[in-house]
Every structure is written in C-alpha cells, then in structure tokens.
Image (cartoon, rainbow, N blue to C red; front, side, top):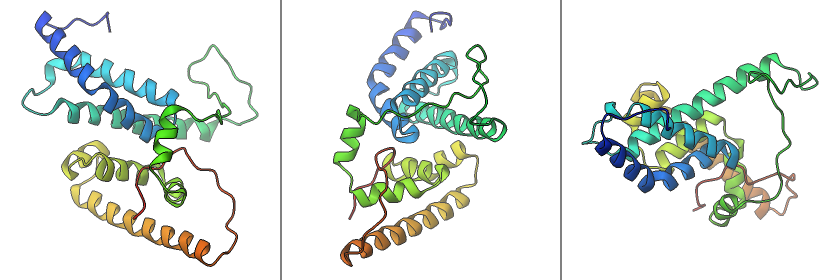
Length: 209
C-alpha cells in the first residue's frame, strides 16, 4: 500500500482507523467464503488494497463495512471464475511452471484444523456442515451474504450482478433445498441407517434448528 498515496494525511488516518475497526470482520467473511486461511488472507489484503486505492470514491455517509464487504465478495467471485477457467484447460498431470503466475498449482489441503475452522465447527452441527458442503459456490455465497452477514438484497444484487427478484427467488430455492437435505440426513440417522462417510469443515455457517 505504500506505493499509493491518499490525497491528505487526514484521509490516510481515517482509512487506517476504518481498516483496524473492520479487519477481523472482513477476514472472517473472506474465510467463510473461501473456506481456507490462505485464500482468506489473500482476499482480505487485496480488498483493503483496492479500497485504499479508491478511497476517494467512498461515500462517507454509508457504512464502510458494507463497502469493503462488497469488494471482498466481488474478489471471491472473480477468484472462482478464474479458477474454473484454468481448471477447464489444465490437466492434473500437466507439469507445473513455478515461474508463471497463470499456471494452476494444485495443492493437497492441510488436514490439521486451524483456529478459525475450530471456532466454526464448534457452532455447527455435523448435518449442517454436510448440507453446506453440498451447495454450489453461488448458493453458499448467497447464504453467507444474506443469512450470515445480514446484507440487504439490494447490496447482494449489486455484488452478484443479478436483479433483486432473482436474488430473492434463488435464496428461496436454496433455503428449500437445504431444509430438504437436512431433513433427509436426520431421517437417515433417526432410522439408524448407516450414512456414507463425508468430510466436513471447509464451509458451514448456520446452526441447526
């Protein structure tokens, strides 16, 4: 950030104060979206860098938190789109080129739990973890923005690039799908039927009712 200059020292101090007061919330949101610490850290840093560069465009009468949330969510959606394009054109058996930033690097996830994952896991049921894992990236993003962060539909509409009516209908369908899958999992357990083993922990955000 040192290469970018704000117009006045007052703007610099104000931005620093806003960053310090919102950093943890922004990181937590990035972690819930990305599901891992590495991406969450990168998304958070890039979001504040972009906010810093365009701070003169920030409307001071609106919450800074909402503004930075929109930035980090857009960055996450861009990350997903870029990864989808790369995975479609690169074989898992292809050689890696460490000197090219455009080459896909496939890494084995660290199975050791980190503090953020432990905190999330403590507040969620195993069934809800399974349901959240079964959703698409877009569906999880909608749930995080609307149900976890409590973001207004208008803001979600701007972030996702979809009309408010589309956001409402997709959320409704996602909620219905989640209820159906949660009920199915519980029915399996209540019936004492052995359920297939699943991996949990990457993304799970809602407490079971």
